[in-house]
Length: 424
Image 1: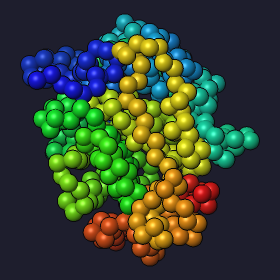
Image 2 (image 1 turned 135 degrees about the vertical axis):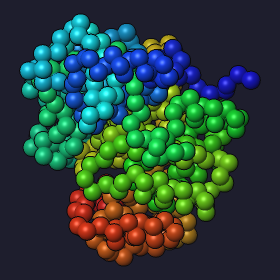
Image 3 (image 1 turned 120 degrees about the horizontal axis):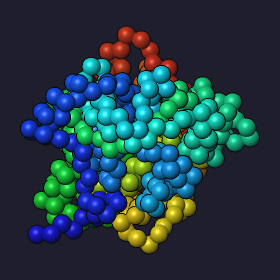
Image 4 (image 1 turned 135 degrees about the horizontal axis):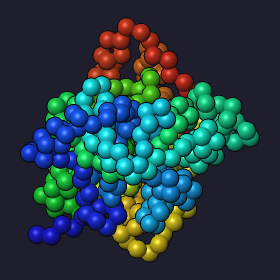
């Protein structure tokens, strides 16, 4: 039976650079004799996504024309939509040049080989331009000159880009490892081919994804259940790569989701899965990236709520929703983004409504609303403060309290307007 799912992004099916079996063995043997280049955690995640088809149609890291087009107009040189540059930086002193074949390693493990087709300088001005295009938003920490006052110290994405080495190298890759993810997250770390097979087996055609980097609280649960009501099923898709300091580790978050699904969902309508990227904290741009690679996983609806993928107050509360209305469309399904946003208003528990609600459904004042956010929850747990009624399910909160009780050092959590409810 033919699949009813949305086609992978880029019109070429799932483009998977991961080698297996004898091909992998031969490439690993060859890699031992190649020049070895150490890569970042971010690049490791990007490589794995290229390997499993999550970044289809990418076959490798972007050249300068693609980098510039993605930053400037959300399109690669051939017109294919892509929202965030996928680049690999190296130190100029390493002498990597076009025509070289190199091995990409992380902590002694060979993750890929790469045929270098281009090496291009990244000046400080180039890095700053990328930061302004990708990370600058419409929130109070981005406007009125605040972005460059605060970003280099407070925005993890800006800090990461400014710290990149002075040359980007581009070219196709052959991926040789999925890292620790298959062993550490069995049944949760799923490839696009696996999720598509699961959706097909369940007869799903209309699938929504809920992006998570925090444990699920009542607003997340509400968003997922809205999607369950109008779609065939929901993929609860957690980031299991690296986060910023103070965020809750992936194993703790994955277990919290399992507890919630076990007790409060119809299991046949939801799948708990993880993906191996690091957060870029690019707010609206990252919301688009989340939709782009979710299309490869077989998802055609991306849940976008308040302050999606935000950090601090760099972004407007619903900027990640609005950006979907501004992206280019060529009319060619092979090049355009087919995964569409499910735009959900600010959600909360209302004591007067006696249930979960949103600004579109609740007529009561702010004093009746329990404002829910991952940051607010993490701060309360870190401070040992009382968790207000209806913030989360008791079984989940007990699990999270146990994690925080195990920490030997208190985690400082910065509160922002988006999480506090002050700007409601």
